[in-house]
Image (cartoon, rainbow over all chains, first blue to last red; front, top):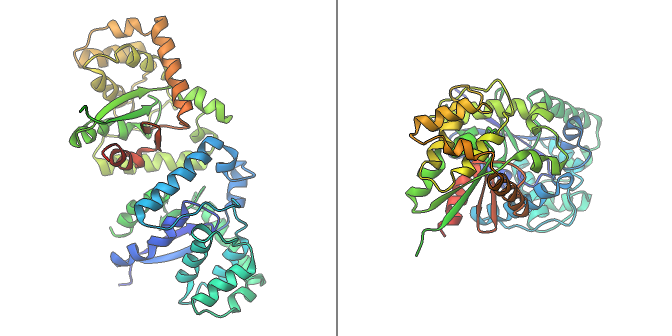
Length: 197
Length: 197
C-alpha cells in the first residue's frame, strides 16, 4: 500500500504559507504521509473573487492583524521572521521553477529555500538571481530556472491553478486530501488527521 | 491578585463564534483565567471594510468552505451542528439582551443557550420568543428582554462596537488580552496562552 497523500497548495508570496511550507514535510513524514507540493498563483484565484490585490492590502485592519499574527506564529514555531519590504512579492518565476523541478529530489528544499530567502533574509524572490542562489545552495543545477519559461511548464502551472479553483480553493496555504479542502496554516493539523484516517 | 482576563468578542450571527462560545468559559476556567463576554455587531464592522453582507455570502467559495469546515469542527469538538436556514441571523436583540444582562450570573448560560438554539436546534434568534425561551430555560427572568430596548443598553452596545474597532477587530470570534488581538476560533489556544503568560 502506498502512503496516503496530502497536497499543500501555496503561493510563494503568501505570508501564512511560510510557516506551513517550513514545517509540513516533516510533520507529514512523522505520520507516514507523503506531502505533495502544489505551487499556484493567487492572482487569478483572487481575481475570481473580485480582488485585484491581496486582501491584506485591500482591507487594512486585516493586513495589520496578519503582520502581527505572523510574527507571533513564527515566534511560537521557532521560525526566523522578517516582514518583507515588497508585499505581495511577484511569485510567478518561483512557481514556474518549482513546476519545472517537480520530479526532482530537491523540490522541498527549493520551496523552503525560497520562503526563507523572502521571509527570513528579506530577499526579492522575483529576481532570477535570488532563485539561482537558492538552487546553488541546495546543490541543484540551473536547468530548472532555464526550463521555467518553457511552454509545458507554463501550461502545467495554469492547469494547477484551474485544479485549485475546481477544488474550491480561495486562499493559501490550503491543504487537500482527495476532494477535502482545508484552508489556512491553522488547519494543517486537521488536514494531517484527515489524511491519516 | 485577580485572575487574568480574556475577552471573547462575538456576534450572535457568527458561525465560527459558535464553537468558541460553547467551549471558551470552561477552557479559561481550567487555566484560572476569567472570561469576559463581549457581544458586538459585525454589521458596522463589516460596513467599515466595504462589505454590505457577510463575506461568506459575498464570496461563495469562502462560504461553501465555511459551512463544510464548521461541520468538521463541530464533529471534532463533539458539538451538535445544524446549518441555519437564515444566514446571517438578525442578532441585534440577542446582543442587547446580553448587554442588559452583563452583570448577572446567567450571562454565560444565556450566550451558550442562544448559540445552541440557532446552530443546534435551528431556531430563529431574531424572535423575542426564542430569547424568552432561552431565558426561561436557564432560570433567568424576562427583565433583560424588557431592558434590551433601553437607551443605556443601546449606548453600551454602540460603545462596545467602537471599542472593538479601536482594538482592530474585523471579524468574529476575536479574543483580546489587553491590546493584543487574536482572530478566529482557531486562535483560542494562542489567546489563552497569551492571557496566562
